[in-house]
Length: 212
Length: 144
Image (cartoon, rainbow over all chains, first blue to last red; front, side, top):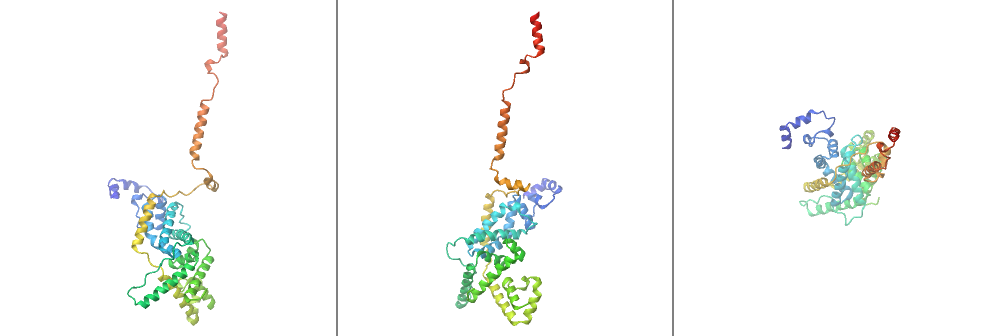
């Protein structure tokens, strides 16, 4: 509506006639948020464009929640971690440097660190089940076995240090490259491989029922 | 590649060859074709992969909508993003040490200085000074 009004008044033409050097200087009302890449949305957010930041949140909240859930193991804590991370991303949006990282990787990094901080705090209560509930259509024995397997995995995951859980979240769950996951966790590639190896080793041992 | 090397690869990167480092992928796949033990170890790694996949649910739409709404409300109240600090590194390092409001303080000090200078006691006005021409005129008047 507002776009149409501006167009009618000839403002849009006047604005678009000016040569703008980059997406960051594009007038807000003519921004195509849905088509803009993450880095552009973040640049716009850095200028104070809240709609651009909302678009970025729409794209990434699901995956960021998964990362935080893997690390904290508790849905409520995961939501808080994502909220903290996104507010931090908003405050620092103008400082994001697309030459150093992709916007998604930057958000993963902030979220992983926020979730690690929360996971290190003492849990107020036993870990909530993060997995899917057992299929109600399955027979009772299958449901019981599935539930036991999920509980076993949750217990094994809870035993992992938060940084190992973060490495699993980024490298396996989200499919980041080794270099990206290492950069997001502020470790070397070798350090990341060590985190992954120890995490998987402990999980495999717990699932086999043998001590690591 | 030896079995131990493949085990290390599987323990680090999982069972999916797409995630293995390209430099080692071909050798690992070749070993898998020839060794039953290698295939057994890969199957064990695949079981861990599957369990990890199954254990992480997709967040439901209601949760995401709630998170997005909460975030939007927080962002609406939050101040605008902080601009990146520019300038020489020394100034950027010193800036946090400068107390808040120092600009206003400096402006106040300048105003006070200017006010002080403007009310400073000055010497007598030029017309009040008995200059040589005026003295001469007075002497001539008294001489008459």
